[in-house]
Image (cartoon, rainbow, N blue to C red):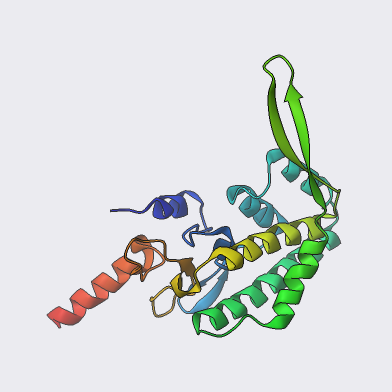
Length: 210
């Protein structure tokens, strides 16, 4: 049976949402093709598009971030910082999968990124229906700080709630995709049957028939 994540992966173009958590989907924005790195975040437009697909920003927030990234220098600086942050996250995912602890300097980086995101809850009322809603209100932040805080929060939430025994790297020989195994029997091996699973089946079949 095709998993929902496989359908999402097809509909999102170059972006794969097969990690079962946004923190892992962020790591998976750097892929591999024929053994070579394949970058999906090639511009700030790509980054903002990914944030929207991952449902980390609303349409209004997207427009605000675009307005704050008018200069080429700001765009390049942001992209460099996000890629560097992702690189350190992927390095630490390797450590976690190998049974090692997260590096203390990466924890410090997460906490520094989180500290810039000042938010509080705001209560509003619809008087006619006497219904109430809570909304998060944020201190205005520069795009770099806001995006780093959003991603750092996803990573922190994942690390605080996940059973790391179910953190996996795809069993494909040249695949670099990480995922959280939420299957009932926790025997998932592949990032996606549509990508590496079928490739493995074909290779096994060819090996059997000689």
